[in-house]
Length: 351
Image 1 (cartoon, rainbow, N blue to C red):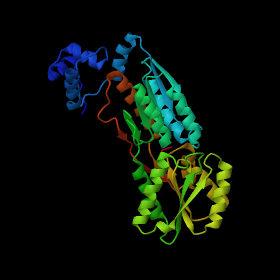
Image 2: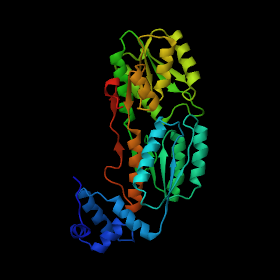
Image 3: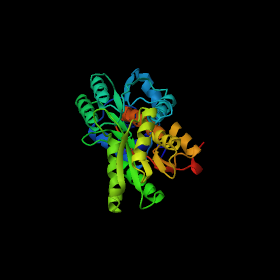
Image 4: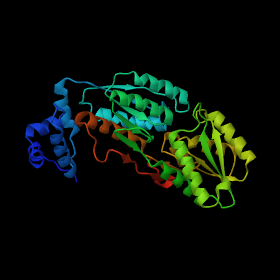
């Protein structure tokens, strides 16, 4: 349980002066490494939670302004990345008492070239911190190397990338997500049927960070069950509803044994809608996240289930962690946070 310690209580426990604690908590000046370590040990031991709102008052008095760059894929309203952005915007509104300059820099989640160009621009920007959507691995690694050289802290949403040093990351366990998708499909689809796992077509890098992890975990599950031969991969145009419908209709005509469709991204509604319109019966369709389109299809019955990763919470927590780090030069012990994973059916879909 978080403790509401006073500055004097922290100072007594750490064996330093109240003024030293005040400088650490409100980033008002340098202190010795020994004093900083002692204070941080007390805060961690006492499960101390900083009050960002009260700290904002002290920060405003300094006259400083933090430039925070947020780089995530652009998306339509109600789609996955828009839900992450909604969480970010909610946090920015809640902590509006800070002096902040916010700049969104968007890229195309289906085009790694777009991501690379965007990240190159960010490396040249003057900023206090960066929040990054980790869609593409190599591009994210390259950006992080540039930020590391400049000493700029960065924070991840939607995943973690190897060979990087984020101050905090907020995401669901993607290995667990892929395995859960496989287990649900295994339970809904007969043993003698085939299952299609659908991936989005992309320009440049063919798989995103999360798609690659989910696919590997999905396949490993069916390999353990000695059913890996029943799994078929298929790529569709996730950024074009009409084309996606035509592609899945043609695929199902060519593969009549397919009775389950697992979509590894958040646009399962494109597939479930196309399956229903094409008149195919007895096909289970599942995917990710309670987007507007997916929620609509769950209610209508064309989409059987979704696995929700709480994208809005990822965005909100990333902003909190960024402000916390900029204020205190450290993150909460819980800063690297795995989101809860919910299985959503029509019966438990929140209106």
